[in-house]
Image (tube, rainbow over all chains, first blue to last red; front, side, top):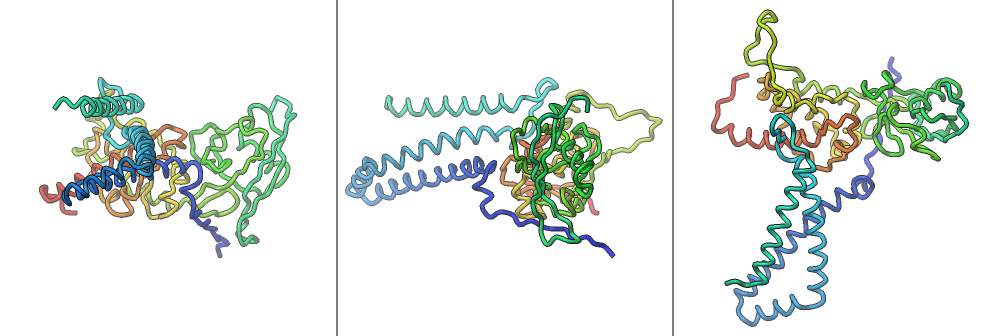
Length: 132
Length: 251
């Protein structure tokens, strides 16, 4: 007769809040930023449809301290998400082998992050200069 | 041990005897150590001089057999590859690998892991088998590079102990099985990816992975199982949509 009695340990319910998973949880939560900001833009579109009065109210809300704080928080979360998203990018794409040797993951992250920064900067510059 | 052990460190080891214990409990040992001693050597000192009933797995003592994986200060590590001097002044907690049932002390049940490895058909399946007399299947260095790091897996199971998705759902196929699958799928001499696709499909396949990435962080051989899992997300998605266009072989 076997004396085996394997003991199964329960998974901690708060594993996502513990190290080393905390970093992952923050990265995933920062992705919610996009949904929140999309809701802000969508509410602006709805206000635009409702007429000039609603549009002015929405613009007024954008200039309120609560909105400015929200946008500052969203910006920080978005920058964090951009940074961490490009960190895992090399692991979510096919292995790149150039000239017989693999492209270092750090280089892929660096190129991706640089392209994102250049594009974002160009977009901000385009909007600020208003060439149209 | 030529050097005199003049320092000590406390090891708090999780003990579990299925014949007498209802559940595991910690037991502390004060271990004398030298500069070159690993956690494994600390455990061997305990077994040799304090408590011969302490149970743990080990074999090669040089980080290649993958037998002595355990949780050291909460992190999955090879005990032979972790030096006591780096953990000083301690105390150091030593526990069996997380997410696996404990058989006794630091020994865990590996049955589920072995079944998962078997499920990915872990051998080469050439399209046109040929006898040895016809010579080897040649491969260029670039073709080798495409899968070489995945072939370094030593089945130590540290990645499963680091994976919270496996902890939440033991049916999840998990990182090492996918790394080994990718080792063969990525091999230019292999033509068996269609046989392996069922192992990556479904809720317990690769889509159970939420890209935590801890598996790659703890891998002692830089196998990067997270990369293997995510490459197979793409493969399984392509297979899902292309099955309407291509005729699959009857099994």
